[in-house]
Image (cartoon, rainbow, N blue to C red; front, side, top):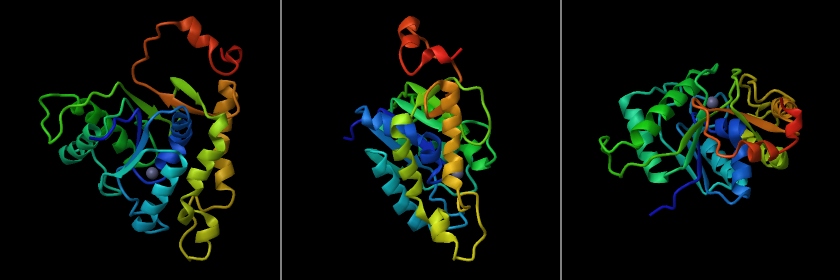
Length: 247
Ligand SMILES: [Zn+2]
């Protein structure tokens, strides 16, 4: 029987998770938590690289982030939907991996697959806990579904200070070598957002911006639909980086 995960990040395409919550995954692994990544597709609609390359790169990225598990749900890139069959596939994964906390994209994004992943994750986390929803495996109740920020702004519920692991996050993103300029510039295919020169630095400036807001060097922003209950607010606000900078 597989040991339960503390934290599971779900993404539509290989590289989504690393870019949106790679910092938290690296930090959690460093803190001794069991972490995992579930890629819903193999990114087979991608401009550069093959599904086989993407899978290899995804495994390397997960290794860099210290994940205990990396899985692929085998859904179709470009056609993600919260239909019954997809929800069922995801419920099976949640019941097998038994995560305490699940991270998925926020509901609004430029990419329809990312939006579908958010809806799918919400339904699957809900149904995975129900006795009445029958699959091969027994029900599993995750404690919390957290949404990571993708391309659209949201009012964040909390920040995770990823200053200590920013280089690990960067290395995990760069593990997707087929997506980057030094590999793709000669392949004659169109230049994408990621394959443009300077992408990685421009991208990591987002976490620097959140760090500025959060009072640390680099941060990732997260949102929950219902605010968490805090038992000791005084302790909470005395922990973490430079709380006096956040008003
Ligand atoms: Zn994506």
